[in-house]
Amino acid sequence: MKGKVLPFTKEQIEKITEKHPTPFHIYDEKGIIEYAKRFNAAFSWNKGFKEFYAIKSAPNPFLMKILRAQGFGIDASSLAELELAGRVGMRGEEIMFTSNDTPAHEYVKARELGATINLDDISHIEYLEKHAGLPELISLRYNPGALKDGNVIIGNPEDSKYGFTREQLFEGYKMLKKKGVKRFGIHTMVASNELDSDYFIETAEILFDVIVEISKEVGIRFEFANLGGGIGIPYKNEHKPVDIEKVSAGIKDLYEKLIVANQLDPLKIFFESGRVITGPYGFLVSKVLHIKETYKKYAGLDSCMANLMRPALYGAYHHITVLGKENEPCSNLYDVTGSLCENNDKFAINRLLPKIEQGDIVVIHDTGAHGHAMGFNYNGKLRSAELLLRENGEVVEIRRAETMDDYFATLDFGKLKDF
Ligand SMILES: *Cc1c(COP(=O)(O)O)cnc(C)c1O
Image (tube, rainbow, N blue to C red; front, side):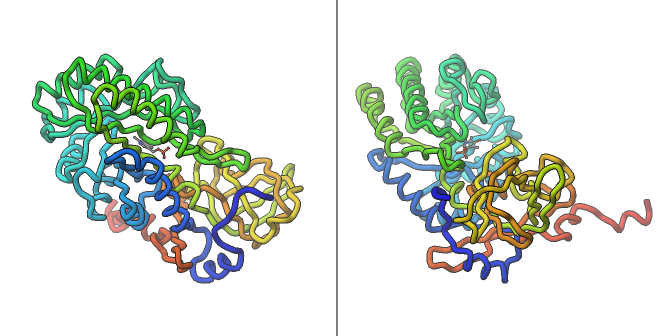
């Protein structure tokens, strides 16, 4: 089957499995760096352009270091994600803090690091002021409501829990100005895994329009427009990737028409994409433990939804390659399963694949974002290692696999005898 290509050969993977037992996620450094460069180049017309990698997609400090070297910042949304950014040495406006339903201690941490804070709700202006003090720079998250159609994963903006209404946005900036805040940003994110390039251009237009109006009415100057994440990736062979150069060109046109024409230039364009940056460059590598034939045919892997839960969670499609059988006919119908005691623990349902045998190595594509990160321990399943295939062909373990000791670390068996 043509289409999806792997950055490694069967022989390479067999060699890797001698040292690193399956299952594991492996990331392709070259692919990540090439895409990061392309993303930056596409927006090089915008002075101050910056992508803040949404660290929830793959919270690994090694990947962060690679992306930081390309000029990327980090988008964090929790205490642990802020801490991670801090531990990699990130400070100040390299960190975007976009959270919701935020506890006070997270604002305190964000302030300590000097992160740019992006508020999700008007009530958080006073909450932040009370608990952590108002910084000089603040961004507000806009929910355009009925102005924008929704998309499948994130849903309709009107049903979404995120952001300020249009009215609240005006009120919010007025409040901030009155309270002495000096620098302003604005954010919106109304898509997830969206493959339509025009969607991002339309979103920019909504944001630029509101920037023009607020700048006039409130009398403030915006430093940046953060377009959020949500750029989709071609999980299926027939999907077309988002044409990032086209997105950029569309945004540039609007920038001239709305921002430059209204003397609101310069305005920095930010993104906080996760999926598109690392998603296509990660792979879950597993071995086939069992073939089972009952009413259907099952290929049971040594990984499970604890390693990748998107198929079980959203019915998401992940392409599967049986290593060494790329050119064999896909004439066998399988459910590809894990071992969790949940019948939805399936990586694929009714998937046509080459004939699979015990011991075959199966590669699940596009697990570089929202893959390992979503893992969990239900059923006592342990999360796998993460490996990095370096540009020079070397393989580095960038996170070890969890052990039984990790699993039991929160229990004190000593207390049992007096219980
Ligand atoms: C999840 C998330 C992102 C990243 O989304 P992708 O679909 O991975 O690009 C960015 N910003 C916020 C606020 C998010 O919640």
